[in-house]
View (cartoon, one colour):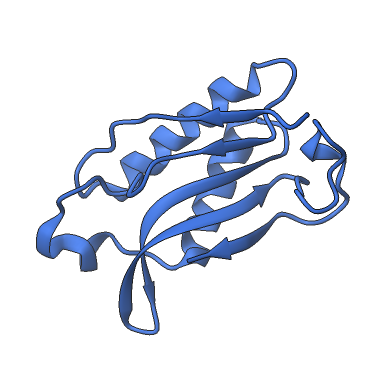
Length: 131
């Protein structure tokens, strides 16, 4: 059976880098759990906090940038492969969206994973969906 973690964090308003580091801290905590977690879900606007008013332009990133930054945090945390869902403000084709990134970090893949073990897939880390 897949193991799910729901992470409640308090993002600092408008502080993308600090909030990504907070996410990395959660990944480090999850790395210590046995058995390993398959999916961790973070809140809406986890990378910037709510109510950034006119600051969305300053904290919005592409899905690729967020994936890269999460991958670095995952590696630093020495966490096992897992999937993440992270709410963020996204910039895409010069438009801004309140989005959610669903990605596999490490060798995780919900498509190829056996039940209860996301690390059994043999695919590269990837952004699976952003909307």
